[in-house]
Image 1: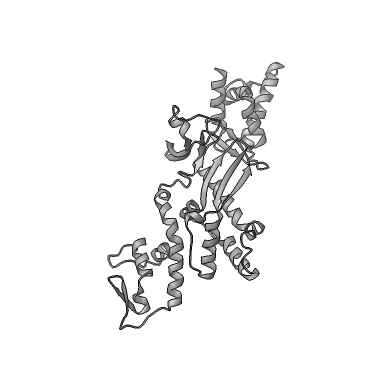
Image 2: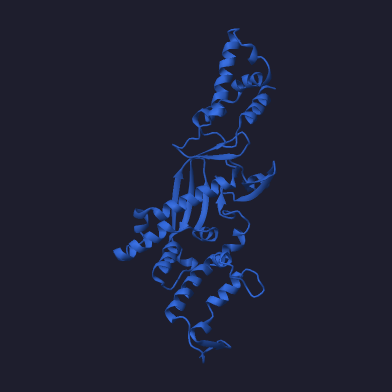
Length: 324
């Protein structure tokens, strides 16, 4: 709503965008019901109401549902969706980390085993791109909401018509960062899977409020946890960070593949003393070194599972280091 009002240029008297606190005060003010409050007591006013009591109560239900999410808003402002929720394969928490290069800022989640090696046992998964894991988790949540069969397991107490309404809302719902931080309990990274735990009780009650304007009643004691384990492979990239490889999903880079093929071909011609003059100097001479890259790097390129930021230039630099 705050964004909607800002887009419509509905500003405060001072000409600034309405703050969330101001909007909350407006939406919960009973003066619009024709009432006034004084010292926590409510009285009928002399003015006529401008909205119905039913509409006012519906809005209060939504405000109450959203209030549970506000406790996560502080961390959400940091830009790191999974801060405090992400763990490595040794149960170490992963915290946000940043680096700068070529005018860009790169975000990562780094295991506490790297930052405090004396206090934490280090395992295989140490550093992962923040954008990659956050996108993975967001996509998994969208799939969960759109999984009709799965969600119906938790809607058995509702009629068929009510289930359809809630399922339709789930399929079209666009979750923001604060909502995601509310429903996600934790995310565990393992070498062969990513395990994501959700508070399904909160999800169902939230959509019940949206669908039927029902009173939102939820406490942490009501939490019902479901865990979705997605099979993946998490491998180490040349930049010494981990990358999620989803089975069946490949990203073939023909420039990298052609460079590798050309390197092997030039080395074959060289062994046969048939190397053409243009392969003896310049960039082609450097390309010949690609054959001596670690086998796992070459395999990842041919399988389309290499680091998405890998280029031919970076590949040659890696090969030259290997040949020293």
